[in-house]
Amino acid sequence: MFDLEQSIADWRKQMLAAGIKTPVPLEELEIHLREEIERQIKLGLSLNEQEAFHFSTRKIGQPKMLKNEFNKSERTFMRRTIIISAGIIGVAVGMGFVTPAIAKYNEQGTMVHDATIGFLIGIPIVFAGISMAIYGFKKRKA
Image (cartoon, rainbow, N blue to C red; front, side, top):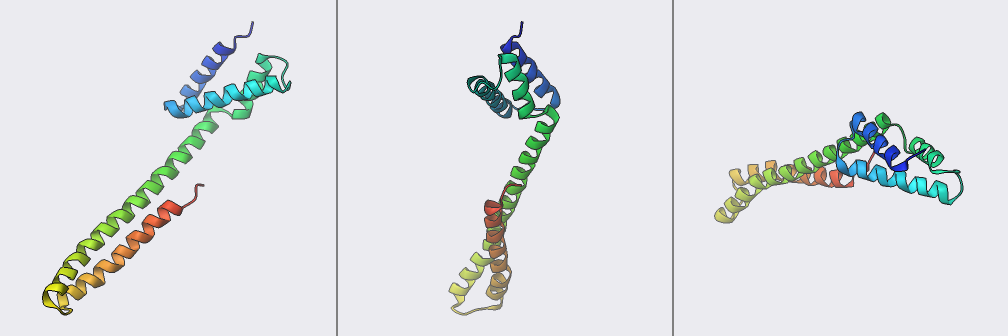
């Protein structure tokens, strides 16, 4: 006799063995599996739970393929996080050059050599940092 809950528990073990160990993706996959089984039965596409389970697991995909897709998603997220962080650091470093240059300009009342160098170095770094951060936010997922 087919036991749907036991079959889903076995399916979860296969996912864990394939390397999908984090709870959120595994829970999300199980929810999709259960919804697909329910859909199969409601629409009459499958005669029983066993057929619906087998069809649904094939539709969701093989454990290794799913793991690869999760890895791609995690790499994309990390890459975007690094790009945005580098942009923010760039803005901070650039402002580290610009702020003393502004203070020197205000103190002297005219553009002096130190202030000019601070502006020439800091402003491009600030703009590069801003551009990089915006690129990281706007970059589309693969």
